[in-house]
Amino acid sequence: MKVRRRVIIIAALLVGAVIYVTAVLPAGQLLGAVTTKHNDAATLRALQSENTNLKRRIAQLNSPQWIETIARNDFGMYPTGSTPYQILPSSPLYHPRTHQS
Image (cartoon, rainbow, N blue to C red; front, side, top):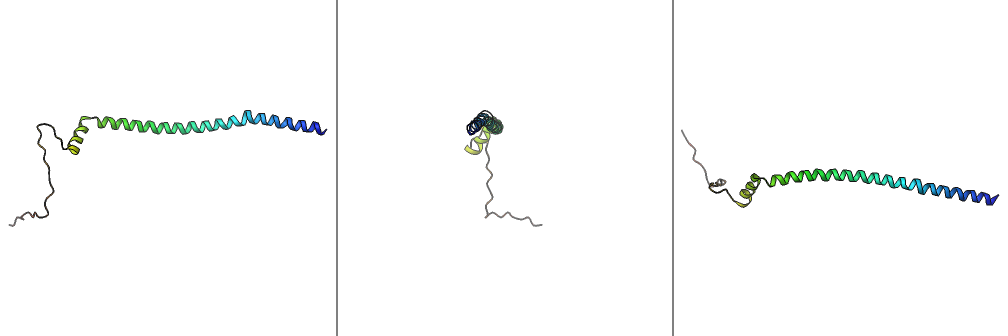
């Protein structure tokens, strides 16, 4: 009777181990894969949004108007034939005359 009982317990443990290995472990791996998929999808959306913004910025930087603005503001370059003017701040020593009636 004791031998039969041990055999049944060992068989039950083996069946439980087989069920655990075939059902529970893959389910955990599947849940991990689903979580990873959701995280990767969120990362992909963020990268696609950033990529769209960068493409828009590249188009802006390549526009002739932007290049002209950078050339003028950063390098002091002006189109041929134009006359650049520079407005300087007034001197603290300058006091305009007031008109008296």
